[in-house]
Amino acid sequence: MQNGEGTGVDEGTWPGRAPYAVCLTHDVDRIEKKVYHYLFYGLAGGLRGILTQIDSLRLRLQGREPYWNFEHIMELEDRLGARSTFLFLNESARGFRPKYWGRYEIGSRKVRDVIKTLDRGGWEVGLHGSYRSYDDIDLLRLEKETLEDILGKRVRSTRQHYLNLRNPETLRFQRAVGLEVDSTIGYTDQVWDASRGTLPYYPDDCGILELPITVMDTIGLHSPDVRKKTEAAVERIAAAGGLIVLDWHQRTFSPSEYSEAVDLYVSIVERARSARAWIATMGEVSEHWQARRPPPSGRAG
Image: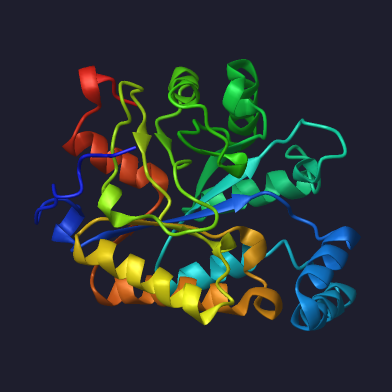
């Protein structure tokens, strides 16, 4: 899908005449590492994977949950002078499919507490639409309302789990339940091609703002070649004055297991800070963009 806005950048595109913008996001898919995670990633990663999983298990035995990482991210982003969007999943699908595994209860005390802690600290809490909600407006509405009840305020940002999308129906469902900004369009295994556009856009007549994912942490950042290609893609978008959207799962911020991905995340944010780029949450990008370029037919979020 072409966004048609790749060349529409000027000095006033971003707040404070920032040269480009960075939007930081975290999908909260799993919060606890299970036995099968250790086995799967160990066997899939060869000798390196086995050694990594042994180290991860050692941390677990010392009382640190490798997939939790919320406090670590908050401390890190505090140091970087940044805030991000955490997208929480409320998965109801059941069965033996691996894509359903690792579910957590969004209404548990532990998850409710971290959601409220993030909100109080200035982070944005958004909805990670469940595996089937992309094709079920009633399920999507229920998930949004459940999260809003926990948060005590409106939820406006979303991304669909596994990037499931039926276009344009899913985007229309999102808008119909009161969401205003989505970041589902993108890839899990490659970087965003800047030729498709570098700015937020309104797909078709859906009335929702789309923030394409520039890069997701699933791309294979342990490979020097992949990191080099990712850095080049990020630089192209920055040079064009566009929006860089990072999707780093909170479970990735375990330095013993994903050090390369964490280092790249920090590097991109630090370079953005040095360049005086605008670093924002999904909701902040949406608010700025709607004021600057309202949705078609005046359908504000």
